[in-house]
Length: 165
Image 1 (cartoon, rainbow, N blue to C red):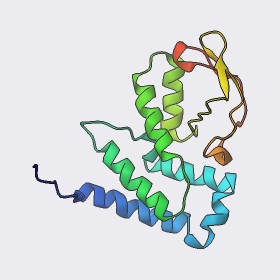
Image 2 (cartoon, rainbow, N blue to C red):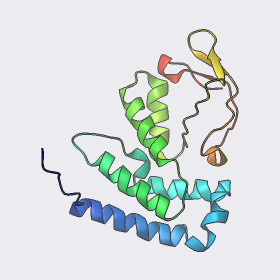
Image 3 (cartoon, rainbow, N blue to C red):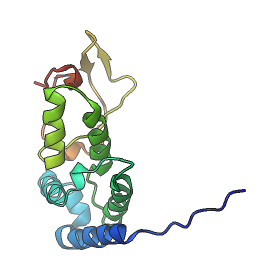
Image 4 (tube, helix red, strand yellow):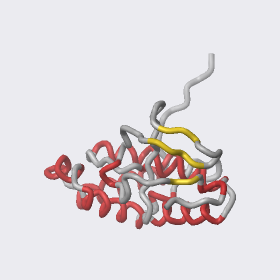
């Protein structure tokens, strides 16, 4: 039987947690968290603040603390009842960093700067690939849809060098 490793946060992660908690206490107070979570403008404003702190540029990486910092930040977002799509951004950063093409690079830069708010949408009956690159259909639920700038669009696969319109 192997020994369990102690789950102790590094000094860096404690700083990340304290910084996030302070920002969220100031910018997302508990007294208005429920109402703010339903307000697209409040969510977009908080997303911009998160981007300024570098949260939207995190990605899982073996040589950085991206994944650990992401987990700490998601814990603090949950504690503050702040529904930012940080996990979606972390996944998008990981995928886009490996993608080829100008469209992927532009989207990566937009996610990391906080300009783009990403959300993963999955619906087993929601769409079909029509020509090998275009997803066509309706998705019944998109988590974090309240913060989306465009809720419905035709989108071609940006990893194949095609753009959303």
